[in-house]
Image 1 (cartoon, helix red, strand yellow):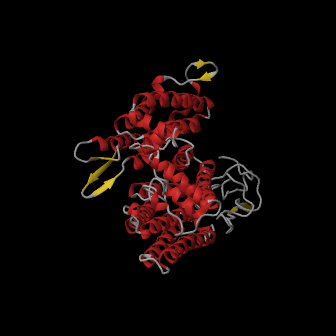
Image 2 (image 1 turned 135 degrees about the horizontal axis):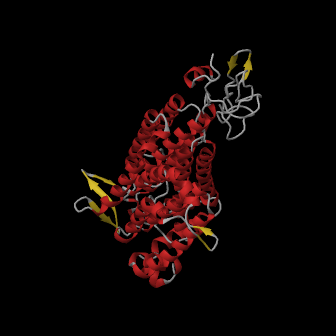
Image 3 (image 1 turned 90 degrees about the horizontal axis):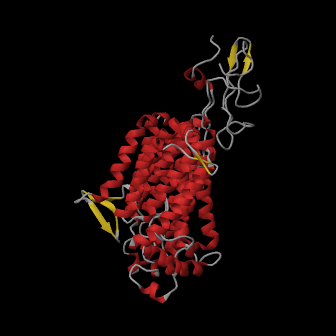
Length: 506
């Protein structure tokens, strides 16, 4: 027998995790959503809400189907990512249902059934991605295709006939009775482009070029494709009047450059460019100036009462204050008094009814989701996967920060939606695709490898030689689907042959 067995020979002999931890976490996540549905109905009408059985059945089925697909196609994936997404989605549906059940005029746009349908579509697409995307590295072949698709997606709202201006922002397209926000999908394709381009050019970007004031600057010709995408993000700000998307794309641009080159100078340059751009934009573009004024002078009566002023922001702040430490309770507050309480301001709605404790709990779930994404980036073996997972995790983190920071008046309002929770089909669909890709990369990072690696023979995640026959010691069914005693970042399985007996690279 050869010193190294192929993966097809080894993998059947490796015990697959039962993924019981993921299953139990999903039970808790679904129970939280259904429990919220019950409390909403009892508080408002002293009975189960009108759409209770539909919402509950849909949430159970979606969670179960996603779990089965992951268990079959990505058995070694992180067991926390899917439950975190289901929990956020379920609580978001409960809040939209609560606002809809209130029957108030401010709740006219809330449609929990439609949002559940978008959630189902998002989970279905995520399952398809997990099922058919066998190796995340195949996305690297689409580097420049992803760049072209990103530019097309960002330009679509400006196309006459399909572009729509809603609330002053030209960020929507309307085709065949459906509305969509293309920028939500552009953040995924841009991450794929950045990961593919930077993994091929990171040495050049990090080492070549002049040094100015101790900072290593790249050569302009090495930044060509990246500068094109950066210019597109500025065009979004100028022509589409979309401050949030422009900020998200620029943050992704800087973060992935830092991940690829590990040069802090990129963070410094990004902060300087952002500060300068913010000043110029505030002085040049009326919509940016209006957001800045509403942020800095929110409680000024003239600003509060002005059209497009700070009225919505201040109403959200009053709602959070009404929630206090533990909240008014499901169905007991007045979140519908805030315009767009089910979309842009859903976080303030949750804060009013769940209180500061609930706000921190929601942020903790987002933190867990982002941390597992970054953990995946650390443990995956290939550079493209590291950048892709890191970029996708950072996208969720930055979007959450921008939304929560905006409604709490930490930064100016941007108009982005809170991932998984706010009403909006494009956002739900895009973020479920992100979850699917993270699960696929996580499975690759944790999957037992048939290749020998450096390390000492021992218990768990390695193989010991038994005569002339390599013996595979597969992962035990630990809480995280990995092996007991395994160290983070190590290969789950090693093949040690008696002729080498050191696990070294061959």
